[in-house]
Length: 438
Ligand code: PLP
Image (cartoon, rainbow, N blue to C red; front, side):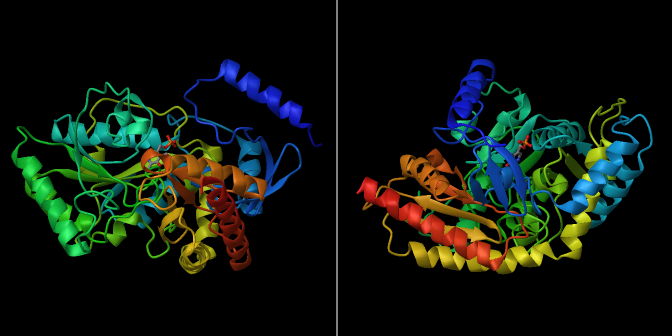
């Protein structure tokens, strides 16, 4: 049943009256999405959209994937929840598969219900293991919205009120589109970032527990450090006994195309000490988690539980989704179709002054916008493009410094035809916005 636009307005008013002001909503007339299928979603008024954001990368394979829906309903029909106090076959099954895929030797997996909680747990483990509350994080990073994770979030627009008890030092290396290192080639850039890190460590008294980093910055606008940066960092960190936490909440499961995990683009000298994941693995069901080798994972000596972490229904979804992803080589699809989409986007935006660059890897693609004729980031253009794309039946995300980048991360089953359609719709939206700004 379709709704009248006024119903959406009243839902928005009710939302504003009862939910926090800081809970971000897209669009001046926010959307209520009611159902989805494949790479498409529908709103309450019956409009259909090509989904190029997948619910912030949570719909990893496809909307209403029958394999996942079936696994969820069968598990829910048996038992919905038991808690971690009892053995759970789906939880052990999924943990075994993730441990084997992680690349971390003697791996243990702890399930949470979000990426925030996964990073929180990783910080708890790393600080307990190293007996230090000092952490290194990257500039422009985003790791969640809990008390500890806002404290390691470098992106100013997401952590302005942090009073976190962690002592965080921010490392250079996340973004180089502008600033002193913008002109450096990859090798020199890595050398400069490593020199910064060494310098920082020399000026720091006491041990540091860990460095946490996203291999590709997600909320930060899909910005990519050069391959090998974290391998170079790791050599320095290892000398100081500092652990490396790879936040794979956005980059895991083959989304970047060339690799199953984002860290693999960086480290030929071994996996991270801890890896965190969330978002796509449940295809929309709330699963997060940490992988660490036993020595680090078992640093906590007190007993603990996670009432909802590893819930059987979410684990059933994760197992079905992971099986589908591997059997259908969605990593390969992300590489092929993502590569084509990046090429198409570069081609269709080549003459547009409002576009500074199209960057990306696999199905994680960022488009940075500037005020036409300048090099100034244009967050207002990003908001306008989101609206214009919506009018044309395309949903995308935004982010990056000052919110001036568009973020494109469709479900990983995206077809070539859908990639081409999306690129055409986005080019049209960009053209329209450029016309307004000029
Ligand atoms: N880490 C990264 C890299 C993220 O992008 C996010 C969310 O966008 C988080 C952690 C937090 O995850 P969640 O929103 O599931 O708590």
